[in-house]
Amino acid sequence: MELVSPGIGLIFWMTLSFGIVLFILAKFAWKPILKSLRDREETIDEALNAANKAREEMKELQFSNEALLKEAKEERDGILRDARKVKESIIEDSKTKANEEANRIVESAKESIQNEKMAAMTDLKNQLATLSIEIAEKILKEELSEDKKQKEYVQKLIDDVKFN
Amino acid sequence: MINIFRPGKYRNGGLILLAFFLILTVNLSASEHTEEAQEHAKKEYNAGESIIEHIIDSYYWHILDWGETAVALPLPIILIDEGKFHFFMSSKFHHGHEAYKGFEIAHDGSNKGKIIKISHDHHGEQEMPLDFSITKNVLALFISLIILVWVFLSIAKAYKKREGQAPKGLQSFLEPLIIFIRDDIAKAAIGEKKYMKFLPYLLTIFFFIFLNNLMGIIPIFPGGANVTGNIGITMVLALFTFIITTINGNKAYWGHIINAPGVPWWLKIPVPLMPIVELIGVFTKPFVLMVRLFANITAGHIIILGFISLIFIFGNMNMAMGYGVSVISVLFAVFMGILELLVAFIQAYVFTLLSAIYFGMAVEEHH
Image (cartoon, rainbow over all chains, first blue to last red; front, side, top):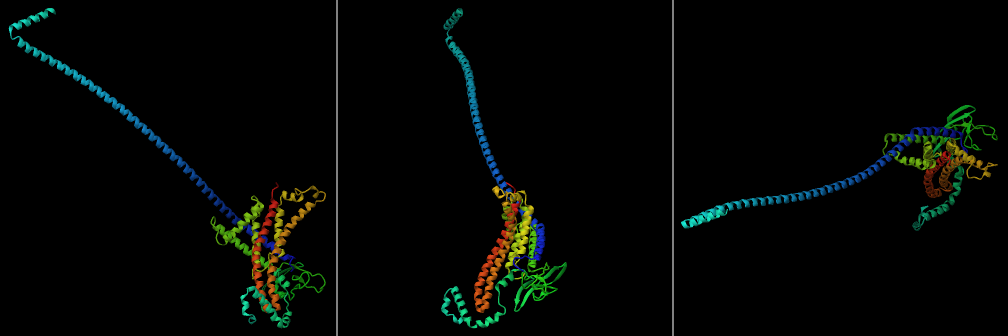
């Protein structure tokens, strides 16, 4: 058995057995092994992609959350601003209304004061007239207690009538 | 012997000690040299013969020598001679000392060690039957193939059972190698699109060569057979690669051989120099594959056996010297053994990588 002269028997057995083993391994070992390796890698890839996607979505969600928050703040500010305006306008309104009311009250008070005054004046005048009549009556009674004077007075009255 | 050493010498380094030891033993043995020479003259140790015996194929699986008797596994002999089958165990030859059924193991000549037909004409051609015997290498080949099938079928089962889960045990040990071959050899050399077709073959040859290289390093049964260091085995492997390359060669591949681009026209016409060179290249590639694996593994084994033989060569001169040399020899043999482990992987890798590159060349699309 020389070192570099291959024996036909060994070549025959090698070709036969190696061929069979190659076939068996290719069909029953390498196929399932490579398939499951690929499947696992795909699963890992998918999982990584999904994680990335989720991260991005989270980021977007955060973004939209922030936007939402900002919007809400703006809306709140707007509402507050509006409320302040409304409050001011209400105050303004009520002020003017109160002023008007007050003016009106004052006016009507003035009017009624005027009326009262007028009534009082009239009353005063009436009383004054009554009083003056009474006074005149008393004076006349006093004056006309003497005949001479009565005559003089009648004379005078007659004189006055003549002028009318 | 120990008395001869002066205590002071022990303070020196180990190597100096060893050197002294060797020198002293040589001097010491001078007186008894004649006696020993006579004793060993009968069976002179022939290192070359012994080494070759260890690395070539055999009809026995020699396990060990126990005293004078060799413990060897007899192997079945299958011969076809003139259309007739002959089947018997190799023990019938009594280690080559006897003939059986008209066959014997040749002791000399170009067919030394092979089975020949007995002829009384010693000067004539030795006739040889067709020899399909289950020799040591064939048996080792079967054992390794059974291991290969068993290991990878069990791993395939593990992959099915533990689908989508992390690998475990043997599976996790071999998975990096499988992925390495797939990604760094097949995908890199053949390309993303076509590598799947060749991957089963590449994986099979890688693990076949790697396993047999490793088993070749193990010195005891069932290791120790020089399977990948046998040119018949590497020839078949190279032929598989050659046939797959040739079958899958596309138009661009053959076009490149017949009309190599980028070569001046006068190298092709009228004398087709380049096509001839290219065509020779088609055959040298598998030839080189065959020789590289064979030579690397065989050379490694020869070196280790050479170091071990040194022990017996010196031991034949003188017993103590044999022990002395054994220290150095074993150290070197251990070093070579570790190197062989590396070579076992590298040669499996190189064979697979080159096969992949040839497949890649065969299926490469023309740019």
